[in-house]
Image (cartoon, rainbow, N blue to C red; front, side, top):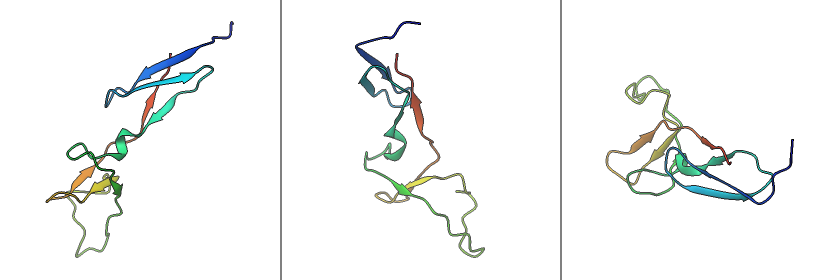
Length: 86
């Protein structure tokens, strides 16, 4: 096996952002899952209120992030995306 030198590039399959890093590299995590697709602002972690009188079952516990810059708020279930550099 030979050592590769130079730069490695990769593209996020979810948002299309291109990453370039010096070799040797490891896969990186794209941060696009933290940003609202509607307004582009960074979302906050969503912590559901599990009180039976307040709990909103349509959101469930799958929502990870919430953007409160809209009405109604945007609830995201997208998880981190690994970008493979080649």
